[in-house]
Length: 400
Image (cartoon, rainbow, N blue to C red; front, side, top):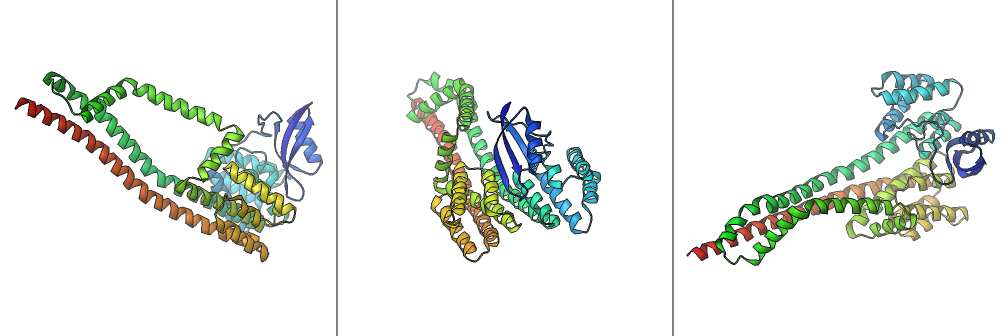
């Protein structure tokens, strides 16, 4: 017998986690089904994940597309089997056809859609499975899939906004560093023999540049490998929960980046919470799923504390505001939603506000970052050229 950690959805639609002793993962699955639960995954207690079924590995974009098309078909009055057949027959991706074909086979054998999707944990998250299960239980699968498709598209759109905005500054930095390295290792060495033959006393800036060029040429590769090794070591170190928590808290305190990340986390938190609660999921079950989708451990702890406060009857908004992880407006808007019994609607409204704040913050960051990089690159190149000119003038004076 071995100890397994499992995740499942109970008959009421709540996400449950726990430990169970069994001979293998199949025993855990069988016992959960006997208890009326929908198994999601099981993993050995030592922490090595074991998927219940071979995950399909659909990309987030493919999952969003499948969800949107399935919602459209169900909204047009098609039954679930016909909607799934449409996905299998019309998808241009072999991976999608394989996964959705397997899902359709399970549904045609009498299984639920949530149960069929749960066989592919590599493609469909806890959030996805929880919403689909709640939609099936409430007889609102089409409406649930529409909300889920909107949630996925908004999350993708927000991530794409941040990533697209960072592409140009990153390319600019690469170009700047490449230009400086090229001048130090290729252009400057062409003048060194001339300076040595003249025997003139070179300016300090020129001597410093020559030494820097020699260092880059001799140790540049080793330095690059060292930086790469340092990055890999840092990544491994951040796998330890205490270090990861400290790093996540530190990032949130940074002047500009911290403000942007707090809005991103708040948008993700409120959008997910509003979608789950608006779909009829109990608050505590919704918060358990929301905690899993947070990408920052400080935010995960804040959501867990809010769930504990809500369970004690102390309310959600107060704990969120006291955490200091999310912007102040997050707690204020959630408090209004709690007072008016419209938590789901106000959470979605708060998500719109935070997403707009994120886009505005990215635009401002880009407006500051690009000119700053350009100025620094221009100053560096100008400094190198000026040092060469001063050295040439020194040779000219010596000749005269």
